[in-house]
Amino acid sequence: MSALRAPKSQPQPTAPSVEVPGLSYYAPEPANRPAPPASPLTALEQMYGYWSAEG
Image (cartoon, rainbow, N blue to C red; front, side):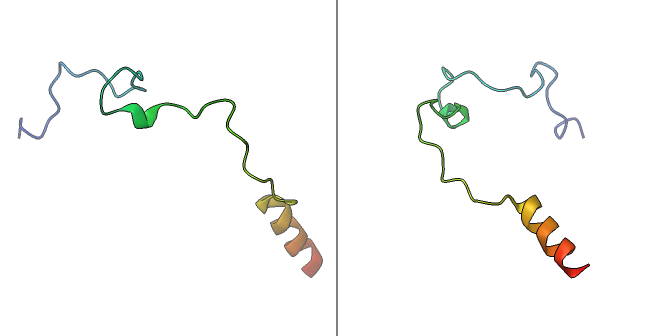
């Protein structure tokens, strides 16, 4: 069963740095990226309007 156990030399999984090859997908999005179009109502506000209209 020792083969199923992770080796003790490996540290706990943390956010890898961008310099690590193959893990560049973990890099955060650039700050100047245009924001997605915002919906007029959030899902919580839509649910509140739905349930308050019934009562």
